Length: 357
Ligand code: CMC
Image 1 (cartoon, rainbow, N blue to C red):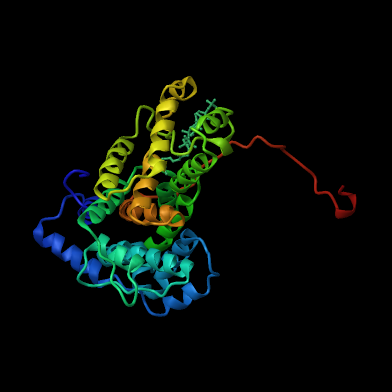
Image 2: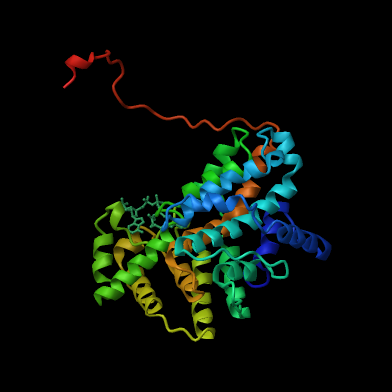
């Protein structure tokens, strides 16, 4: 897929189980184009957020609000919501991109740019991000290709934290928009989707300090969660994250084609080599993950750091949709209810306020 496909086609595959034929691809593209603008009343929701609000918070809130604009798609009655699945999924994939771009414009105090019907998915996103009312952003094929690659590599990834959250919420028969919104909240944490931002913060700090990464590596070996080498390690991949390899190679190609020499890429490579030789990382099977190089690509595309996790969310939306459907359409499905082993005190008497210390 990384070699031959693009994001929209991959999204179709993830949702429908097969790559689309030409007619299906056209129809899917038409649906995405149709649903690219947001209801004008949504502008007021953006206005309610203070300047500098984090785009992930805005994205999660506004994705949830979509159900208010499309009540027939968010009835919280599973069979009815499933009957309109095609429309709802196109709305989610298309509008998550529009809302993300609008949240960026809002965070910068810039006027919103409306989507263009003529543009493909990625080009349209970049247009909404970077065009001005008086001047259109010109997207090169290299940039569109790199964005497609980034998004499709993030499109789904089994039971990660945010996808499990989507499934958990969906298991209560909550509608798709609400379930995705919950997933986006889970994605925002630095151990999950927020890692791509944390990686860039780490690389930038190494650069600013003129360090070669030795201090960060030493701190990461302390075992403290707050000092981890960001972009390293994975809950499932204990050999190598295959996405990291593809993104790492793409980084070199994209930056070369765009004529960018990013010092953070050199630092990332040095850091990777140092960690791969260090017994702490080797013995714990800690390798670069998808987030290690992805920020460098986004930086090359002009995407600001506070949008990195939002980009992950755009990419992951097809996966959320597909997982929501799997849970919602399971005739034997039950509400998720994890059990816990309680290890606290057994019986405690109620203590009146006056006796409490
Ligand atoms: N830097 C330093 N030490 C680490 C790191 C790291 N990045 N990751 C794990 N360890 C250590 C951890 O302290 C533990 O050491 P010990 O055995 O001495 O207690 C050992 O390695 C095993 O770690 P773990 O906590 O059992 O690993 P996990 O599978 O629960 O966690 C992880 C996976 C991805 C949360 C973790 O590796 C991590 O925090 N990485 C940094 C954040 C990151 O890059 N997240 C993106 C993940 S990929 C995309 C996504 O899911 O969003």
